[in-house]
Length: 302
Image 1 (tube, rainbow, N blue to C red):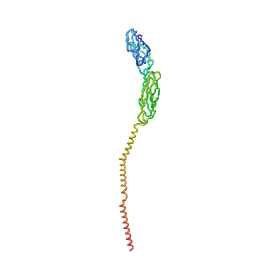
Image 2 (tube, rainbow, N blue to C red):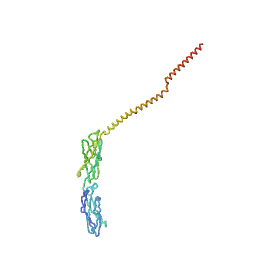
Image 3 (cartoon, one colour):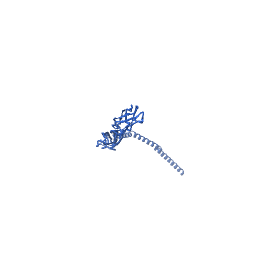
């Protein structure tokens, strides 16, 4: 084998977001000039490179390149031991590839964030919001939730007082705020509070503080008195309209209808003058009939 390669250290420690350099010795023991290219293999390949990426060596000479490990500061690279290898490939003789190996220990870090969704909320009897806790570190975390506020005015409670988060995950806990006293009417009352998310165990992280507000609304809305006054005024206006305009029109229409009905009934009955004349005529007829009877009697007697 004409190629030899070795790492100065096969076990190193890297800080997330930092850079760790490991010298890599390469030797050409062949009789011709050889060009080498380098390939990092293993889970660390995404954030590790060799500088320079290629190297030419004369026969029986050696050189040093740098293996640069740059683990990102995020939850995608877990804390702990991660193996890696560097493939040293001779361009003219790929069969002579050598792969020195090592282990990098990624140090742990903690990063915890949180958010109230929504930050301000309201309600008459109670109000609710979600507490979102996000673990952006590269280690699991257990977080304990507490709330700080004026307990004489509002009571605060969680659906989950403790949440467990693996790296890169978010957990929710519902926060409920209940006022200590009812508010029947008047302006809304704002109750400020603070949620404290405290990492449990030995995680070196300060508590996360989340400020929020719960607005307690009145049971009787503020617009109700104005609406009642407007309703009373509308009723009074309708009553006035009835007496001023509609009632006279209705009475006039009723009077005209009565007169029409009377006019239709009267022509079918005899008038007093007609009845008197009829009586006189009847009397005259009766008198004439009596005279005729008398005359007839006299003639018979003679």
